[in-house]
Length: 573
Image 1 (cartoon, rainbow, N blue to C red):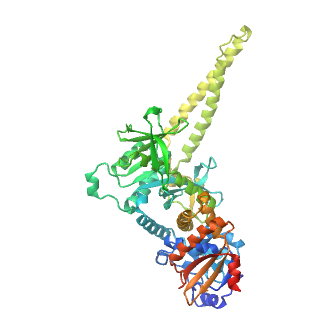
Image 2 (tube, helix red, strand yellow; image 1 turned 45 degrees about the horizontal axis):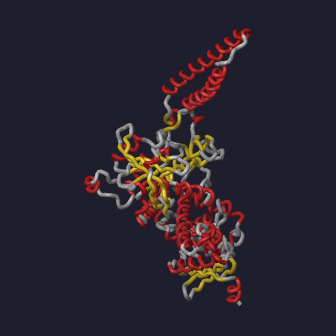
Image 3 (tube, helix red, strand yellow; image 1 turned 90 degrees about the vertical axis):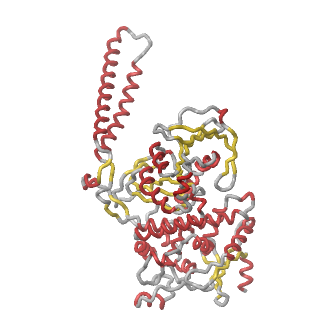
């Protein structure tokens, strides 16, 4: 049964007669470690943690229910326990008090249950329904959607993943790529996992755009689009990797706006064109910027808007926008809001262990998968190596072209040396031209079936990771909503510290006081170390209590209180 198991009858019945799962049952407890994470339960439920889980997922008969597993994983994420193995160093009985059981499952049991729930099709359907709910709840946030790739490096030895360039390490390493779709405030909607990365433009056109056309709410009707040629369904924002005039034109034909940085900006505009404008940002604050706008025509004949921001140091940031309805200030704010997605990915890596793999199950890729041709990769490696050697020879040859007088006795040696350097540089140039011709004649991508078996790559099963990543998205959304409630009541000098305050609350001790007659479960938080933050925490407790959330699988309504340690002792006495 494991250390800390006290519900002997329930566990025996669940194991021998299939009487499980059991319901949560709470008893009065004082100073429960990490019980402050219960403060996030209303936000987790409102963000859809248990929405449609009973319809989408099934567990074999046992002691633990779906509700227990989902709650435990979400609480682990918020408490910054970054892997299932991290539970080995936590008291299972204390965590069991948080979810209303005698103890939580051990790490091996929890990993097995995540594997059972991690069916890729079921997880994808559940995540898609959550995404639709999030978009329906906040339709204004889907007017401009942000897309960015995240390279997840694989350091294991079981799988043979294809190589990708990892910007953080500045190396080409074995990795997979996730493409995230977020709102302007950085809130995630969904993620597309690609073990073999075809590039941002390919994923946008083949997967993300068709899905958004089906799921984005309140899109203009066909009659509205026909009546106004400048009207778009929605706008996509991405970085310079997605800059492509041909892609812009294809999206314009599908009535989808594009917002991106110009990859080849050209000469600077005169400073006299720029005007001071007040730009409203995503979180309600405003900033003054020097902006200028022109209508430009790309090489494929597409006319679009080019907006530039003049920075105090004279640098001009160039933005291209195909959406004709966006004001200049809104287009600039929309492009600069892309950093919210960068900040989201950084926060998720550092706090929620976004790159952690819950399992290492290896699967084979379909033989029709297009991968980089190893022959092309080898030729390209030779070309880059030869280019370095050629540049060195040209520099050496240039140094021999002296303008100063040469000793007559050394002229012959100098001419021989110069002739030899010129001959070697010419030979390298000929080899370079031959390699370039070979590269043009060699296919860049080929089907996996044409690759020798010993060189073929495979993939890691993504079902369990997609499930945990979806719970992490829910946890981030819940934490963001709680941070917004806290921000309103923080002292002026403490604005911006709401997430750090929440992190301390999630791992703090709390008292659990169930009242079966009144039908309440009171969570008493201890007084924070900083008295200035107590007012904000007290208001947060009141807001969460007014939500009248019932703890799942019980009839107990959650009540939150903030009391000092002395008050708790007095009440106990």
